[in-house]
Each structure stands twice: as structure tokens, then as C-alpha cells.
Image (tube, rainbow over all chains, first blue to last red; front, side, top):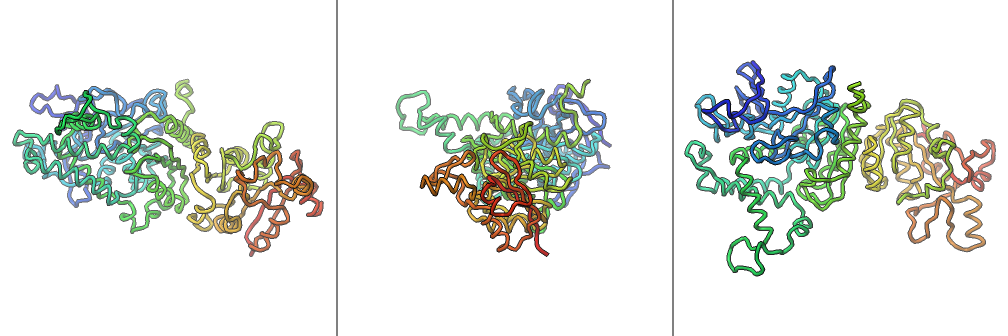
Length: 403
Length: 215
């Protein structure tokens, strides 16, 4: 049984948590007849996917674009976020007249499996116990996320996506989509990502996880039941991770060694420096909208990602005879997912004779550049999608589609 | 930086570069083409529009690549000298090196890779045997500079100039079959087909060669 409903916390006074009843989102429910088969070897059932859509699906269902979010993103890609009240995380790229033009494409953005904004994850209610799953929730992989998204598309009656786009962990899902369902992906835009998590990537994630688990309020993952919240641990995890999203140059340009609201050091461990104050703010605001256990599960999913290993150790085999056209994009100052990782994707795609474009964009903004105002990124995404649209037979402009 | 000064290169009345039109005319319709050193994508676009080819490109300059991708062309940032080795055998019908041979570090290896990756190779280059080039060295005594090769010896991207005669010699050494050749004069008109090679080498400003594997 599959049902979709527009759900909101106000409809469910007994369980006001975003994890079960997301604000301002569509929710697809998958019943016991549609279990999600996980790489961990278990089946998850029932489960739900919270998602947003923008624009209109055309008559032959050929203009759907799936946007995949990153580690701490969610389905609110191009609307005011219901919790933070901030604009959507990719409003620079997605919207009317934007490169991913919602007047032209039907954009779908689902919250990933294991997250905390309405798709089933460790903070969702376990139907067997009536309590939040906590660490009883099975470990999720990127492939599981994509498998669930494919079930969502089946539910929406969309056989082939015109494009799948995403950065960072979203880019990993894009690559997994192309590898798992090559005929369902007409074009793919993996941005600032890699086909595997490096030892350094895993190491940073482990530091974040240890920070959460070292917080006494984490309570072995049972904090929802015990009425605590490992805020400090999650904030520290976010602070550490946030440094990896920026470049040395960007941090220095933004903060340098400037003091925060003072002229001299206090000779204490107060946040003397602006950069400290900024990171603390990043940490504190993050815990308002994110679940600590979800952070554990999603970082784990990224760590386990290794497309080549899934293809017998040869990356090119993951994309063998792929019909998908790719546009791989990296940023010069991204040291978390450096250009060399994108080049590895391109080499594998070339070896598979895939139709691939690859652009490296010069910026000092680091990994986060994919979320920021980068005109060259916009021009490339627009050009790539326009070219793919012509090949797919989509109308050139939204005006043409209307007339 | 472009290898040639494209502002001074001969064009058709409709604005298309004559050397690129010559290249395009050597390509069969509907085939798969790799353009090595594709610049801003003018040839790829011409090929896709006039010959209905499935075109891909490699370009060294980041600006060129990003411009191509923004035009919807399938282009990757890469170096002819190092990245052709990553392509599998027989991946393309034609591999094109347009006005780029003289800017590679290892022209011979590049040519060998081209005919490994593709059944055919098309190479176009400015002919350094042209009389105006010879005259500059002979009478003025300085490294030649022309309308399309305006760079000084110390800042030129073109590090391996050759003449039509030199290139034919390389083809013999590499063991490739010369299928077709065209030489263009300074105004972009093809020289007479039955003219002897020495005439082409003296009066051809640019040359376009269609090559294939022997045997």
C-alpha cells in the first residue's frame, strides 16, 4: 500500500516531531507489501519518504529532475525552511528561471533514508515499539537511499528522470543512480563528490561521531526516550565538519585573526576570535534542526560508499555501456572532495565511452562552493541541461511549453 | 590562450572558419568524434550541426572547457599529452587534432594515441614551410611571426612547429595511411590538388590531413 498525503505537525498533536510528521512536505507511505531491502541484509517496513516537488510534470512524464541533498540538507531545496525559516538550500540553482528551472522541469527533492526531516530514520517512531528507533534502526547505505528514491519514483509514475543532480553526498546518490538504474537516468550532474569516501573523509566523520557519542546526553542513542539531547556533541561534530567545507583561504578572508567584539585577548577560553564565534554559532544553530543519531547514520552511509568495490574493483564497470550523459563538476579549493576525485569519475566514464563533460571551477570557497553564488556553476548547469533537454526533446523554454 | 590568433584566420562569408569546414568535410555523417584541443567548441558545434556527429572534446584551458560545457557540448578538461592514454582502443570513429599538434610536447605519441583510439585521425596545423615564414628567417633573421602565429619565440604556446614535408615524414615513420590532404593559402582557398608537394609546402599556410591505420 502506498499513500501520499500533505502532512503537517499540526495535524498530529500526539507526535509533533518533524521526523514523523514533517511540516510543509509531501509524504509517501510504503506499507508492509513494499519493504525496503537494505544492504545490511534486512528489510525495513513500513517506511515513509518526505519530499517536495516544484513545477509541473509534463504529459509524457519526461521532465522530472531529482535533486539529491547532502549530509545535512533536506527536501526543502527551494522554499522557506519550516524549522529555520531560512531560504531553501539550493535556491541559487533551483527555481523559476534558475538553471534548474522549475518552469521547465518537474523537480523532486526527497529527504534521504536515515535523515530526520520526515523520511524514516533513527528518530522516527519504530512501529514495533511505539518509541523512536534510536540505534535499533538498521544501518543505511547510499545505495539504500537510492533504492528508496526509485520506489518513490515508481509511486509517482515516473519511469525515467530527465536528470539527477546533487553535490557532496547528493553527488554520491547521483553516481549511484547512474550505476544502479542507468536506463532511468537520462542525464546526471554529480557535483563536488567522489565515487568513494577516502580514509581522510572517514577519519573526519569518525571524529564527529565520537564527539556525539562522548556527550553524556547521548545515552547510547536513547536520548529521545530519556528526555535528553546530545547538543554539545552534535554541535562539536558540526563545527569540525564545517571547517572541512571551507578552504583555508576562505576562512582567512572571512575572519583572519580578527577578535570578536573586543580589542584585546581576554586570556581565557572564551570565543575571542571571530572564527571561534562563527563556528560556535554554526554548531548551535545546527542542533536546532538536526538529529544526532541521523548524523551518525548518514556519515556512516557516506563512509561505506565505494562504487568501484560494488563493481568488482573496477570503477569503469560501474558505468559499463551507460546511456546517461554526465556533467561532472569540481571546485579548485575543495579539499574534502578534490578535483582528483572528479577526474577519477571522468576517467572511468571515458573508459566506458560515456558522454561526459567535466568542468573545474576556480573558487576559493572550498567544498561549500556548490551551495554558493558561483555564476560559472550556474552557466554550466544551465548549458548542460539545455543541451540534454534538446536531446531529450524537451521544449526549449517554458514559454514554448505553454504555447 | 589560443594556439593561433583566430581573429586573422580565414573564414567563409557566413563566418565559419575555413580550416574547420575542411576538417568537417572529411568526417562521415553520424559518427563518433573526439576533438582533442577543442578550444571554445566551434568545430564540435559545426560537426554536430552539419554532420550529425556524436562529438566529445578535450580542452586544456579551463575557460575553454567551461564555455563548451555551458554550450551543452560534452567536453572535459584535459591534456592531449597525458590524458589520451586513458581512452580505450577504438572508442571513436574519428579523433581530430585541430591546430593543436604544434602545441603538444610529444606530437608523435599524440598521433599514435589518436590512431589507437580512433579508426581515423584528422590533423590540421599551420605550415611552417610557408614562404613568408621562410623569408622572415632568411632575410629578417628573426623567429617568424605571422597573422595567425603572432607570438614571440619566448611566449608562444606553439613549441613544435612543423612543415607539410615534416608531417608527411612523421606519418611515414609512425606507419599511418595518408587518406587525404588539403592545403589552404593565406586567403583560405585550397591549393590545386594536383600540385606537387613542394608547391603545397611553399604556398600552403595551413594543412589538413586525413589519416587512417595501415592494414
